[in-house]
Amino acid sequence: MTRVGSPTAGGRVGRLVLAVAVAAVAGVLVAGLALPLVGSAGVLAKTASQDFENLPSVLRQPLLPQQTRVFASDGTLLATIYSQNRVVVPLRAISPLLQHAIVSIEDERFYEHKGIDLRGLARAVVSDAKGGTVQGGSTLTQQYVKNVLLLTATTDAQRAAATERTPARKLREMRLALGLEKVWTKQQILEGYLNIAYFGSGAYGAEAASERYFGVHASQLTLPQAANSSRASGSRLSEARLTGTNNLPTGSGSLRATVSGNQEIRKSATITARAAASARVSPGRA
Image 1 (cartoon, helix red, strand yellow):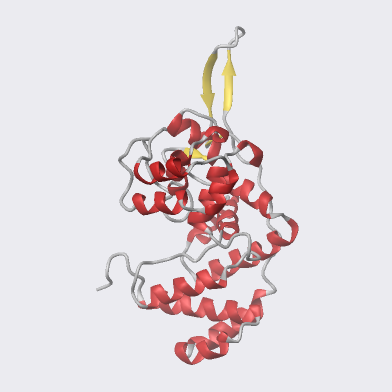
Image 2: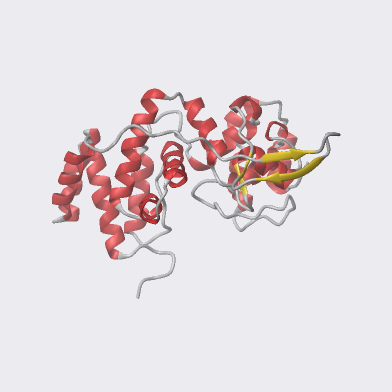
């Protein structure tokens, strides 16, 4: 019987195949060392790497669904209509605290890689192979790609292809991520991610999430609020329910310590050592 929360044997082999294929594409010598470990899966890896360059590399950018607000003649808000509760804003309208928190938690080498983080992928492979915690190994660029593919899917088959846990899906995301990084800056990718990502409780994007959880604009988020918000997005806890109280999900203490201790966050705004220490223990609205 497969242990709950652990990958199946087939899933572990698939992840190994994927790692070898990507290593071959990137020209990493480790691929040659890994092939004996996966046995016959090496043949699949070789085929995947050969076909990698033939995968689509251009990502079609969607028009993100947003709120539509209906006002009376006197300016009174009558209704807010939406299919996805989202307010698209430029990156400059999103607190640098949240920007750095997302990078720190989701993709710490975001500004170093070109769309694929081989170190993160290798770590995920090792963890999965050992039967440990299932890890995605996806970069923020790959997560953005996945969100776009899911949003633009028009059939059940396309939606399934955008979310299935297979080497083929990961390879497709990687190819598109590499292509996107050639035409978009890191700031454009981060802006796209922070506007498309689901933050839980029906809120899509940083602006709607900030208003939903804290009653402020994304540009006004404090350090504890940024730590809360970063936990609700991305691959780790996309269905989080944040309340703005001290009742964070399990493990949030270490999350706040990571975020408040991040030097990039400390440099991006005026934050005292006292405020950073407070963020470790008090995740509220302060």
